[in-house]
Length: 70
Image (cartoon, rainbow, N blue to C red; front, side):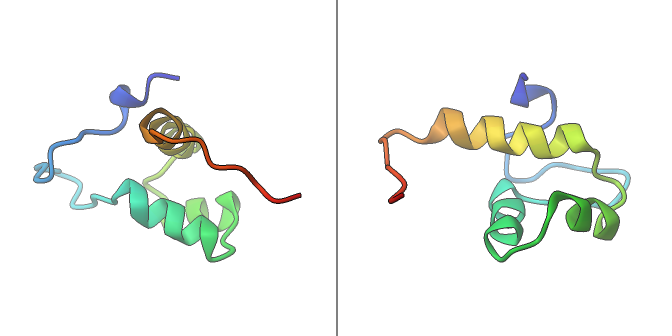
């Protein structure tokens, strides 16, 4: 997955469709308990590959390893 096909690091992006969501917003929805299905239903412009791009972007940009307590 090449997240660059779906995500730009430029803050101001002209979007003729009128919708621009930040990667952090999507991650916050997921952290709040939203499922991928709920996100896709509430934001019908998004596709599953957009969500995969958010995960790929986050994984690449984490500079330090953090560990889950299991």
